Image 1 (cartoon, protein in one colour):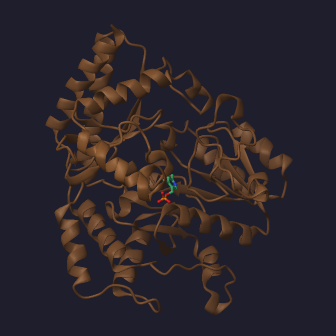
Image 2 (image 1 turned 180 degrees about the vertical axis):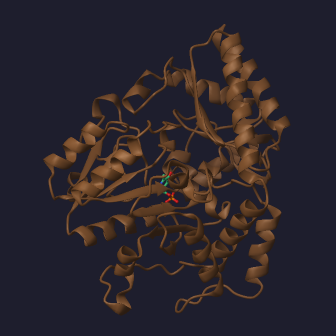
Image 3 (image 1 turned 90 degrees about the vertical axis):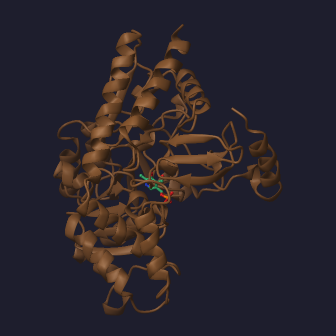
Amino acid sequence: MLNEKSKQLHEEAKKFTPGGVHTSIRNIDPRLIFTKSEGAYIYDADGNKYIDFQAAFGPYILGHNYKEVNDRVIESLARTDLYGVGTTDLEIKCAEKITKYVPSAEQVLFCNSGSEATYHAIRLSRAITNRKKLIKFQGCYHGWHDYVARNMLSEPHMIGKRDPGSAGMMDEAIDNTLICTFNDLDNVERTLVENKNEVAALIVEPIPHNIGCIMPEVGFLQGLRDLCSKHGTILIFDEVITGFRHDLGGYQNVSGVTPDLTTMGKAMANGFPMAALAGKKEYMERFNTNSGGDVWFAGTYNGHAIGTSATIATMEIMETEPVHQHIFALGDRMRNGIREIHDRLSLKAYVAGFGSVWTTYFMDFEPKNYTDLMQNDAKMYVTYRKKLLERGIFKMPMNIKRNHISYSHTKEDIDNTLQAIEDVLKELVQ
Ligand code: PLP
């Protein structure tokens, strides 16, 4: 794989930006500079073409540079944009559409990133309950801010402990974020009892995709619902990845468990910057500071025509075309194909996934939580992804990361990927 131009450009990038990248974890080897994207494919500065399963960490549910969505954005921009006061016709239509599908969404507010949405959800929960503490799960990611940016990819000795996550974080934020174990209701109940009347909210990725694809065990999400109701704690489903990708109504619609608040982002606008916070009207009205509300919510770019028109277009395509049917079928094809390869090679590995998302863990049982993932052979995982990259299959070579299939991927893309997977694994198990 030639990457001379990428190398040169990366040296340029480093002059102007720390490490040459605009998100800390993007600084991985090889450092590629991308110049073009189209449907299921991305291209780097040296002209290498990749089948993309990274999907920019998930937004591309229809595919890159998806013409129908781009056209709708361009059309909208020809007549409207952003005003800073009042509301737009696009904001109304977009909010109405989300409330139609997402069970917990009686009302919606728009922002520009998942981190903003989770920040606002937590602030609102604290206001509603007049409590400070927050429960999150080891391994789950909810954005970059101080309340949640900790205990994600912790070292084994820091699992569940006070793992600050970043220099510069406020001690009070760290001390008030309690870490629980996914799929362990006893652990959650104990934490709620030990912190009686102190836990404002529990935030959870209903499927923790930030560590691949750990499925909630039967009854786990309902158990969280029951415990939160019992303890007066606000249940927040962070559906920034699962929302729209697994169902127009999010994973809450699939699981039948309705949280109090929901955060959304990524796939909702097929790659355009857009996110939302939704929830019960009685709670959301606390943001209505004109009529007695007392919780501050703001953002210069909230509700911009780019994000709202992209969301409306993406949702309309999901309503009228077999998007989920297609990506779920290709997801099954991929998972089954990989399992057959593992069998042929007598390889002990676990293929996890749901719908359009999949990951291969190099361990011989289904992981239920982050601690189980310590059994994953991280070196093998990263080497495997690196070797696939060299064969034109784009998955960032990082440990325990998921892959995404889009509406633009074809059976041929999946079969070509399976062939590459088989070739790489044969090499690795020799
Ligand atoms: N919540 C989840 C589940 C995420 O995966 C992410 C980002 O990966 C976020 C929140 C933060 O979203 P953003 O990067 O748009 O701020």
